[in-house]
Amino acid sequence: MSKSPSESSQPSQTPPGSSPLGAAATFAEYAPALESSDIVNIAESYGLFIDGEFVETSSGERLITVNPATAEPLAEVAVAGEADVDRAVAAARRAYETAWGELAPSARGRYLFRIARLLQERAREFAVLESLDGGKPIRESRDVDIPLVAAHFFYYAGWADKLPYAVGAGVIPKPLGVAGQIVPWNFPLLMASWKIAPALAAGNTVVLKPAETTPLTALLLAEVLQEAELPPGVVNIVTGAGETGAALAAHRGVDKVAFTGSTEVGKLIRKSTARTGARLTLELGGKSAHVIFDDAPIDQAVEGVVRGIWFNQGHVCCAGSRLIVQETIAEEFVDRLTRRMRLLRVGDPLDKNTDVGAINSREQLDKIVDLVDAGVADGADLITSDCELPEQGWFFRPTILNNVATSNRVAVEEIFGPVLTVMTFRTPEEAIAKANATRYGLAAGVWTADGARILWMAQRLRAGVVWANTYNQFDPTSPFGGMRQSGFGREGGRHGLAAYLNCVPMDSLAAGPIDRMAPATTSRPDGGRS
Ligand code: NDP
Image (cartoon, rainbow, N blue to C red; front, side, top):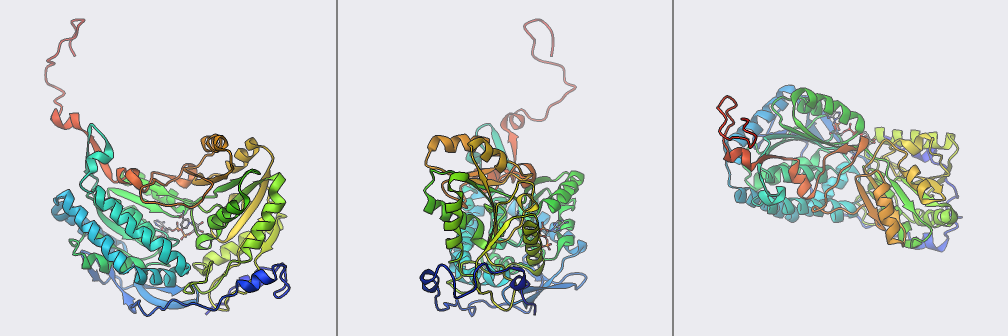
């Protein structure tokens, strides 16, 4: 069992007990309110979910998934090799050709509605398991992740028999075939739902690869799919590490790959799909800017920044991780933000009082520590929360790196942890230049009372999503995705369906196949023949 290195690596700004917050900090100390984990029944060992059943791997290889809040093992999970991925893709192809592809669109919709309802019925179980396996606070898995998962299934269920309206006039929507979907550990079930629900609504079948450190809710979803009597092979789940994902992305039986994760792995997947010709959408990393003007409502903006960077321990691809604040209010803003940050409770993810849970893995914690050290070495001012950290598991205090320069490592690299970097600006042009000084382009936030300025900024910010006077708002009806090294393609909304459809022009079907050798039948006004 490991202890958090962050105990020693995060110097406290103020000794406990002499906090300048005084009464406020005392007021914020609540008695523990633990969510019981009794509702979850975790098996000792899990197989792969292929063709509607849990099956063993051909190699017998296994990995252990741990609870990041205690560093203790939760379960053993099968590691799918190339032969297993091949089996899963074959099952998905069979299901596409014999069951799912033949089904009336309204029947597909009924299955999706059924899955959505079962997810709602078992929501508490899913929420507890997500927090146990991933380390996120139960309040977030209970109130954000799992309700959004069900909402995505409900939303796309409604589209299943209305696809022609989703793609517009003049084209006929056709499914692509088998979709290979690879998801990360920060929103394990939510990312799975963003991918599975539109793929199935559009008539495709799926092979899903969950992240190595958070496979358990995907395996619980497999039980829900069995309960919903989804035809075997429509959704297959292959657990394992990076090699399993690589085998799936490179498989020639896969027609479409959807990936969420790091930019580095996204580049590898792009090479694989260039070889196989599979369609591709990539949702990659980010270093999103949160721009605060001096006319912004400061208290709301502080809350927006808190939500932008400390939600889910900062393990969010679109986290507002770079605060760019107008110089005239910078000192006051950082003071207020520091006060608010020091009220955040870090601790047991199953405690309903917890605001910031556990870091997902030891590797991720080491990466955060390394980057914060680099920021301090580059000259940033370190401001941390002075809360106590649990003795077991992997935790990191909410942290601000103030007075960061655009050339510093922490200003350009994705930290993927509860760490905010702060820079200032004087003019809107400077704010744009600083916000766009990144290889990424996933999201941005703007806070100002001036509506025209919001539009001016939104036109110039190079980001797939721009939130105005809010942050981290998600809804199944809204498309989400990036530009530049944050990837391409959209998930959510009608755009999310388009990623799983081949839109065939209606004319090409009505006219039948083109015979290029046939004599021309129309004469041109100039007497020539075509
Ligand atoms: P990865 O990109 O490595 O993982 C994402 C998914 O891809 C996981 O299921 C992973 O499996 C799988 N995978 C890993 N290697 C390959 C490969 N060669 N081919 C196909 N699939 C592969 O992210 P990490 O988990 O390693 O996190 C590293 C960094 O990535 C984070 O620190 C963060 O900066 C960023 N990240 C960004 C996310 C986002 O939402 N934009 C989400 C997660 C991470 P496995 O888990 O088994 O390795």
